[in-house]
Amino acid sequence: MRLHVVDHPLVAHKLSTLRDERTDSPTFRRLTDELVTLLAYEATRDVRTDTVEITTPVAVTRGTRLSYPRPLVVPILRAGLGMLDGMTRLLPTAEVGFLGMVRNEETLEASTYATRMPDDLSGRQIYVLDPMLATGGTLVAAIRMLLERGATDVTAVVLLAAPEGVAVMERELAGRPVTVVTAAVDERLNEHGYIVPGLGDAGDRLYGTAG
Ligand SMILES: O=P(O)(O)OC[C@H]1O[C@H](OP(=O)(O)OP(=O)(O)O)[C@H](O)[C@@H]1O
Ligand SMILES: O=c1cc[nH]c(=O)[nH]1
Ligand SMILES: [Mg+2]
Image 1 (cartoon, rainbow, N blue to C red):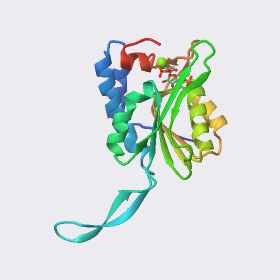
Image 2: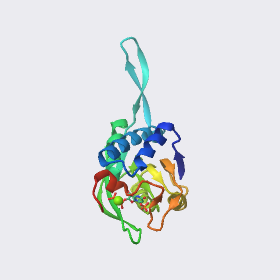
Image 3: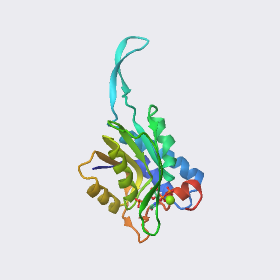
Image 4: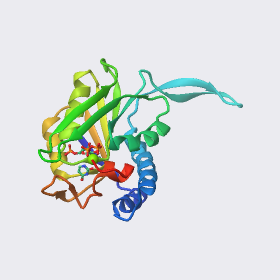
């Protein structure tokens, strides 16, 4: 597994506003969308492309097109939905699959309540979206499922990661074709499994509802 922390002043600025407890849901949603666009730029550096011939008003030349099979973007509901528009804006040819997962806030174990994507992901490049990598339980389970379906290349785009979660991903997905792209790796997890300093519960802050 490869970890890429996007070190950019615009990313740091937007992330700081996102962290601020005074930031309301509409602003949180807008900033999430903007941040994803910046992270997606880095996350798609190795997206597969083909060379094609194009004709400009002046000459025939060689250009670049996103390859087939098309990339698959998989937001992890609920909070990952807030990242979907920003990602598909940059990857217009992508197909979208959905994974509904929730973490039990007492045991911190992740469970899956919805799966809607192709059974066969052979040869596909996948972009998984989830704002928070905390214990890593959710992303490890999600990525294992994608690899079992044949995905050959999985990139997880997250806003924030905890070092504990990164370590779990490195251990559980060692040697697998997996990359994590994040805006920051924070200090630690607290006793409730929340990222410190973090930004709180991403789903609640995006949608203004608890749970
Ligand atoms: O790394 P982990 O310890 O597994 O925690 C991270 C998960 O927790 C949050 O989702 P949550 O379970 O709160 O669901 P929600 O998106 O519906 O709020 C977050 O969006 C991740 O999916
Ligand atoms: O800090 C955290 C940890 C898990 N899920 C969140 O939304 N926030
Ligand atoms: Mg939540």
